[in-house]
Length: 487
Image (cartoon, rainbow, N blue to C red; front, side, top):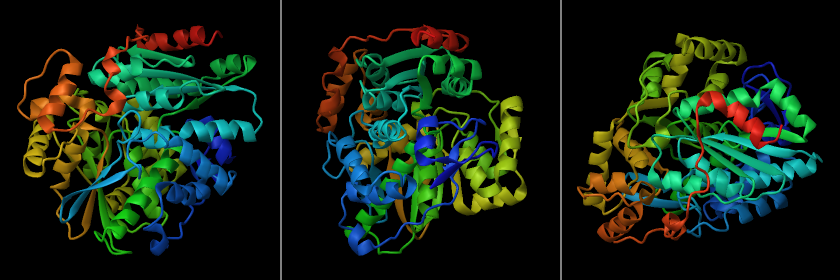
């Protein structure tokens, strides 16, 4: 398996090189040069473990690893998840199921990929006999940072640097990041939003002077953002597993079409569903659920991507994004590298681009898109708890609300991306309860109100003292990185 850049100006690379590089040298994202097809034997898959399904999928993307190696990576990566099957199917009604992806160590779907990525990266280093230390540069809107810091905690031959917006992340997300204790961690709050941080990371990753300085110190850049191909490949797994589980539970017949709705920020989670469909999974319409930062809703309706707009801080902060990086991979698949390179150039220079009618028609054939504001999000949290005695986090609530816009004869799978306890204040407020200034009190109040136990991984989180207190302007990140890495 070889990987190519979405912008067409970088050489083909192996899976190991794509993992280590993160971003292609021409600024593009890596995609398979030829898409693999999966053998869907549902009689076997419906009874297969998550690790077994993951081994089948990931072996197609990264054939430099043996199946035994991948099985070992997956087994170790998910060892500490609090649910034996790793992901859980939760029935919402006769036609709708939730895919709970938040049973990992930081209670968000990012754990599904970021618990695994360190194993893939460190094994890639060993197989290619590279002596460098990987510097994992990561921008986060909240959940990626905590999951990456947990995954790479004291992993040999890695340094992890996380930038998060100083305003917008939840108290719990901030506490998870600022209390990260690994000796290889560096966490910085930035005076800007996620888009600012993500743009800065992309610029640093291809900064040639910085790269040369790092080479002299045996350092090499990579990324834990969903621009890294390892993130996307790992996310394909849970769609295949979910489909198999729905067949096993009798919620779906083998080969029957399944629609998927995903709360969407950087477009990685829903792109993984699209890739699973390309591999042969019988998925129907994919619904892009956005919050009040509805740049994607507008784009899928008009074909015009307009990032130059007011940035809104919402109750679903992981989706507070105006530049969705992984959309580039989808556009490459539909229109090719030349078109993508032009559109991304326009986005960088003008903060906008417009795709052609043919590409827009292809998009609209495959995807639905709609958005839900914070008021609707709260209403949905309250409605589902009242009717189903089930707690939604605000991101999943956006997806549940948006799903109502698109009636379909097909069975529906709605991706649930975070534990409601990660956003206790928002959930309590939606349920008509008062909140305290003390986030630990809010966790306990939500536990008592819902009669659910506070997840063990965060039960004592607020007893820890933050060790990362630095706050910087975007313009100062490069100088800080040079100082941190002693360049």
